[in-house]
Length: 441
Image (tube, rainbow, N blue to C red; front, side):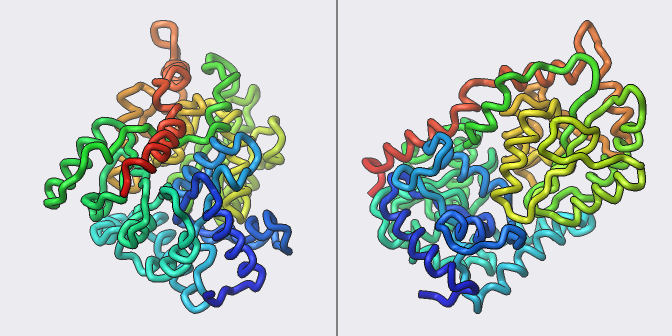
């Protein structure tokens, strides 16, 4: 047993290992920590104000989406269980975790360092220093699992596949990094991909790296989306007039913070107008400094900040220092409410926004995969690039009716009639996992 920073985590460590072994659907991801929620789940003393380390909302929310699809509202460990080995990194290695988060946040928030981020990406997620830290807890947690493991992070999937474990790896974006094909020749791993284009790209990247892949083991499923996000579209009607409800959202690392400041600086002065043209929610996630930015800008513009749980109020902020609670705020109070989302075109925010029936104005992309996501939704008429420094002017144009319908209304209409296969990704992934028991060796 490795030495953990908190004695209560030793109990959750053993409990998680046991639940994974007994679960019909063991799920592994690498997104950050949710230690206090684990302790609360197991009835141990916990601190609801402690800050989580977060690398990615996407890898957390997608994994949770699959679990929620199986649980149908209430966690059922025997049906599915989700674990992130980052929760159990040893005390000796913990500095590597915080350093990785710091580097990610620094790159994500500084446009001048974006080119450096591209250099970092060339080394791949399989070569990050965090991998040495998560490998011991990952192998311990999964040691007794006998059925295929569903992985939402390629680093975890590759570690397990090389150990001979049977793995179903989710390719979370419509883009194939070289590290996805590293172990694709093995007969104990298979892959779920976004669409046919991503499937073809997978075969192409594998061939260029001289790796042979069995076509049966690369399956088109669509993206994994939480059923509660899909439910948010149920009573949504495309905007035609009146106040436009806009959510401005960051990602797991506080990405696009400079653009978010520009957007809020554009929008907030107009919230004093009568009649008020907008209602705005800032989703700061687990990023305290972005939440503070929102409060500071509201104060400068003499706009009161209403409680996030209220449907009323011209400006609200969704923030929590822990990823599970922050994600719940997004699912409960943002997606069902918003007409449109202003956020980066990531595999979590963009997928979820469209699934919830929102139009999408995209901030700067974080990488090639986000450029591809933006292109997909632009081609479907659901998204456009945001102009953060001229956002109010842009919105006024997009709200104008041309031939009887504004772009805002049309984009919401397209999102609400998105192809059914896009919303059924979770079901398709579960079918692949079930079939994997017979396909994988």
